[in-house]
Amino acid sequence: MVKKWAYFILVVAFGFVMTACNEEQVQIEEGNGGFLWKAVNGDTEVYLQGTIHLGTENFYPLNKQSEEAYEQADVVLPEIDLTDLNNMTLSSQLMMEKAMYPEGQSLQDDLSSENYEKLESILSGFGVDMVMVENFQPWFMEMTLLQLALEESSYQAEQGVDLYFLERAVEDGKQIQELESIEEQLDVLSGFSMEQQLVTLTDAIEGFDDMEDELEQMANAWLAGDVDALAEIDEDYDESYEEYMLELNENRNIKMANEIAEILEADSGQNYFVIVGAMHFASEPTIISLLEEQGYEVEFVY
Image 1 (cartoon, rainbow, N blue to C red):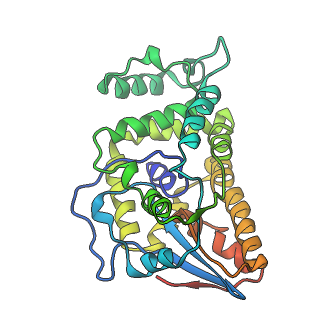
Image 2 (cartoon, rainbow, N blue to C red):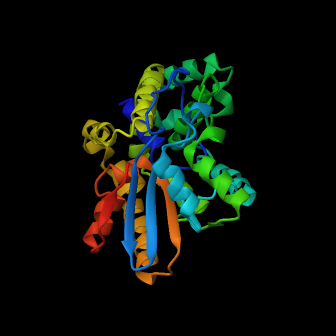
């Protein structure tokens, strides 16, 4: 299930970025990207921008609608604030605390011998000795594979769409208000059952060689603003991913939609610019459908 990798880059703004595509990108007449919606209550406007958590300099500028929505915003609302150095320091500390197996246990106890050997082969290709990582849990090893794939990637976290807007927000003096926290995202990533962790790690191992092609398709779909292409990812998930989809997407969408609804209800008269992974607007229940259930009209802009 290689598309699982592509899904991840559209739902988690944890600072991980994915693998590469070539420098030739889709060119949109009105500018790259899309995935922009708008909700209004009284004098308050909330723009909802679906992002991808990686990029290249060729991504920018984005389409004029997204650029103008940012310019008009008083407050920028990311999943987490990637410009906050305290966030990044905390994330490293918490990750190490959550990533390790309990004493006396190791990855070899849980992963099949066949997949253990495949993983060892992948790691050796990057000069990583299995002894160095065998005490890390499957969810962390999946993240490790992402990081290793990036070493040969043309995509960079520093060029991600979220960071593109966040860095500008800092420079422009706009208020940044997180919808989640580092702790919450890490709790989701590390909180899956061992059965679910092994499913996703196994798929990552088996699909490692194909990851580049799948991610190129997803990146180009984002650049083209192709909502339907992203929504089709859901069709590739079976019951073995039920827990994964519930925790990584559905529960988080409910929480973020409720926070956005509170902002609309408060009607401060300010303009807000929400920047979260595009899959939060494509995978049901989406933030959009959840806001509509609460009585808000959400207009597709671009």
